[in-house]
Length: 186
Ligand SMILES: *[C@@H]1O[C@H](CO)[C@@H](O)[C@H](O)[C@H]1NC(C)=O
Image 1 (cartoon, helix red, strand yellow):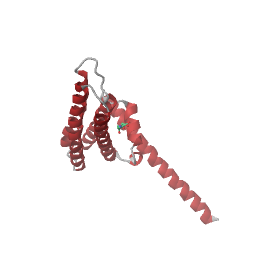
Image 2 (tube, helix red, strand yellow):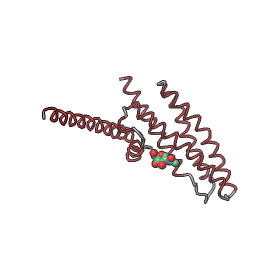
Image 3 (cartoon, protein in one colour):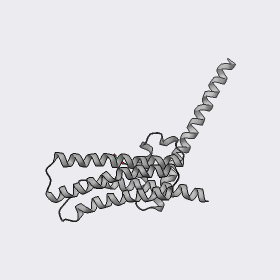
Image 4 (tube, protein in one colour):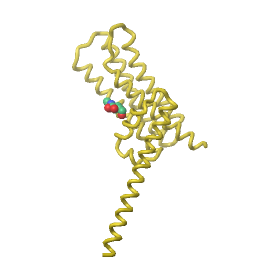
């Protein structure tokens, strides 16, 4: 009977601790996204929380883990978008201007893949300024891709959402790095 009780109570304590840890990490995502959306007008709070929460293991992550997770999200986005553009080019007939834009975007996103990998390496060795430069260049790539379509009247970009996602995820990654840097220098 006694064993039974102590088993039950230790199970309860364990469940309690797990819950506390989960709540703490939830809080970390929320507080990180709150800070990020307040300090960077490019970051939407809901986009930030839903992106980070959807990532595997994010609920248990510390701040440094969230930084890596956000860069990884950029990587998935960039990789998937490159593949998507390739398919668009293959499977549809495009007006020559749009085709040229898509080709440019394909090159931009192709270059972004080694760039984001480099950013991960820098991040892992805590070279945040170097990682920042790489991530910023991915934001530039997304902007350049989107702007291309806008330069001719009547042309609608088929990549607006993807460019926006890549841009905003990158902004989240930069913001998390800023929070880490601010914390370590304090
Ligand atoms: C890019 O990331 C956003 C935010 O996490 C997500 O909603 C979207 O589905 C991703 N897009 C692709 C193509 O992976």
